[in-house]
Every structure is written in structure tokens, then in C-alpha cells.
Length: 440
Image (cartoon, rainbow, N blue to C red):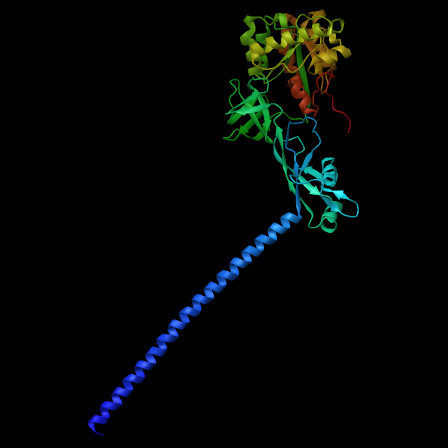
């Protein structure tokens, strides 16, 4: 092949390659435009869909009137009578709108039904016995739900909103690690139940943690104050009696406390207010410290059944105030002088009233042996024994009697401990003379 022909063929080949490259570039550019066009189309479709959905929502909102049915929140003090739950139905639009063309039933008619309590139920897990916050639920009745679907569809809907029941502690409220009663006083030397847990507060009102021994019982508290265990050396299956002493404090009451403490024995002291003098302040505190019971025997030992309501309250309250002043605890029991009780006394007592099942007549005999013999000849499980710590003969008798009763197998407890061991809850205004075991 001539040289000239070779040059011509090479030039033709270059032209074909350049043409091929231009066509490839053109296809590439064309593809980019197709992708861009597809993106634009998608955006247009998406925007149109959003607009359509928005229009549909607006249409639905126009069709459906929304009534809000809200349960009313409420609060109560633990164990008080619980009020009925209530709900309120509201609507901000035109209440004359007809939602049932056949009957002419309007939104206002539906509101009236709901606000009269028709068409739904209100329920709550809280029953008022345990403090806390509990939701109040609304449940539409089946009949109303059917009407909303079949009769009122696209015309009205009901939005339900829960309320809340707040159950407040019946004693008071927490103040840091202390517990303040509703009267402003802090709980001292007493238990409080809060949130389903038990706590104890010492004589300074501080929450107890760790171990605490009180009487026959050992308590264990967690670091946050919760009571986590209780162990007792008191055997509820074994006999027990309550020694009680009236009319004190006396000049030898402290001596009696010594003997009770030495023998791990407890007693209940029903004291007369006018005998609780400043000189006995330490004695009352010690009485409580060794787990004996400080109780009320009126201020001046008058027969309460012969007094007015006002005078009865004065006799009781003045004595309770003195006991609280010197011992730091509230007197929880009352022994009415002479055991005299009537309806007026019951109404004004404000605490359980304790009588007796064995009267030693120690005030009359003034004889230690007579007192001991009378008790030992008549005692039985659950008795409440009446004596008086203002007599020397009674203190002398008690020293021997405590030993004799324990040797006979009796546990010596306070009245409150005896009642608790027998499963009896002491009620204000009621009288109790013994806690014998009953036949099952």
C-alpha cells in the first residue's frame, strides 16, 4: 500500500473514533438530564401528596367535632371516706351542630349526657388506704362507642384524658428525715406508716436506722429508715398478764421501776395529773425508756360520770399534757376513776378506757401478803390486775409478786402489749377489762 493511502486510512480512523466519543458524551449528558427530571417529578409528587394529606386532615377536622372528656383530679387524706370520681366534658366549637339527623341530637345534648355521668365509667387503682398518686381512668361504655362509630361518624369524636387521685398520709408529711404531723408537731418516739412502709422516729424526731430494741421486740431498719424485720421474745402462745398501777406517781414508784427493769417485766401506770410534779420528770422519762406504759387516770380523780362534757375533757387533757411534757409521748390509754363510765364519758374520752379483771383491794387492806395471795389465787391468762403504786405495802407486794408470776409462767406486759398479743385493736371510747383467750 502506498504511503499516501496509509495516511488517508489513518485520518478516517481518527474521525470515526472522535465521532464515537462525541456520541458517548451525548448519551452521558442525556442520562444526567433524565435523572434530574426524575428527581423533579418525585418532588412534585411528594409535594402534591403532602398537600393532599393536609387537605384531607383539614377536611376531617371540619367534619369531626372533638369533645374533650377529662377526669377531674382530686386529693384526700388516707383512710378518709373517698368522694365519687367526676369528669368534665368540654367543646370549643358550635355546640348546636346536629350529629344525628333523625333525632336532632346535637353536640350540646352529648355534652349534657357526658357531664351528667352518662356513657362512661371512672376507675382508679387507689382505694384511699395507701398514700401515693394514682391515675383516674375513663372508659367509654360500649353503647356510646357504637354510636360514635355508627351514628356520629365523621361528625364528632371524644378525646379522653385521665385525672389523678392524690392520697395524702393520714399522719402528716415528710420534712427531710423527720415527719411533721398536720398540727405542726414532729413525730417522736413513735411509728409512722408512709407509702406502705413503716418508719420509727426517736425522742428527737429523727428517723431511726439500724437496730432498735423496744420492750420484748427488736426492730431492724434499712439505711433509708424502712422497717425490714421484727423479732420478739414475747411468746403469744404463753400466758401473760398486765400489771397496772393507779394514782401515782408515788414516792416509791422509782423503786418499783428498778425491780421491773431488773426482771424484764413491763407495767402500765395510770397517773393522776395533779400528782405529776416537776420532781417526777425524770421518773416519767425512765418509765417510757424501760418500756413501761404511761397512761391517764384523770387530773383530780373525780368521778367522770358526774361531770359535764367540758369538765371531763379538762380532767383528761390536762393530765395528757403533763405526761407529754415529762415523757415526750402521748398517753394512749385512760382509766376512768372508780371505773365509772357512761355515754358522756365515752363520747369525750378520746382514747380507749381500761378497767380490770382482778382488783387486789390493796388500797383497802394495805397488806402485802393479802395482795400477793389474792392475785396468785385468781390470776389467769389475759388478766388486767389493779394495784396502786402510792402505797408502801403495794411496792413490797409487787417485788415478790413479779417473781411469783414469772415463776408460774406468766409474761408481764403492758396493757397495749397484751391487747396486741391477743389481736385486739383498741378503740377510743371503748372499755376493756381483760384480754382472755376466746374459744375458737
